[in-house]
Amino acid sequence: MSLGERIARADERGMAASGLACLDRCLPLLDGDEELLRPLWGSLADGSDWGGHLEKARDALGSGGGGGEHEEAARLVRRMLDTAPAERTADAVRPWAEACSAASLRVHHLLDPAAEGAPDPAGAEDPSPLVAAELRRQLTVLELLEGHGKQGLRRALDVSGEGRRVLRAVVSRRARGGADAMA
Image 1 (tube, helix red, strand yellow):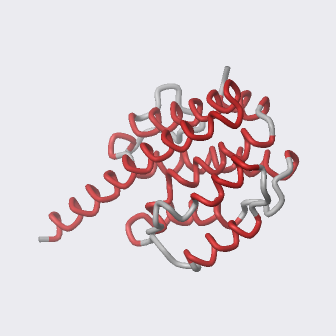
Image 2 (cartoon, helix red, strand yellow; image 1 turned 30 degrees about the horizontal axis):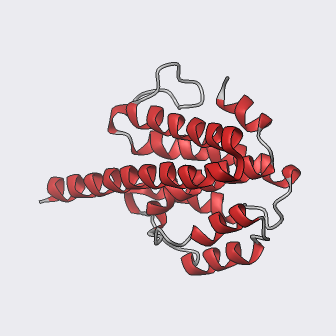
């Protein structure tokens, strides 16, 4: 089953977790604290409103963060956060989850040195390694929520944390590479 089909089949919690996980994995581009989105994950677990937690996350990150060499990628991540719906209804969350999925794949494509000159991830039959790993993570999150419901959130958070560490390492390595080239 394709990623798009999995998102379409997901319930409201699965779609919200999918979008939140994409945002969470890309948070290093906004210089965000990895605990920043934890209250949003908590609201998914207990079913509470996440609007207040969402506003706090937006306020904590301000309007800046990221940029420089990764300006386009940071802009995509910022858009994920800014467009998150305050009300977590299926109709509001579905387009956001789909947009977050596409944006996250694009971010990974932009940052993957193996993807230079490769087609955009949306149409790639053989995606670059970083994009392929992100695609697997997105599918895993949706499978966990589909198969285990609320209990799958903990593992989905772990998968997201793993992806965030990978992206943080990629960003760090690229920054070191740029500094080495300037020296």
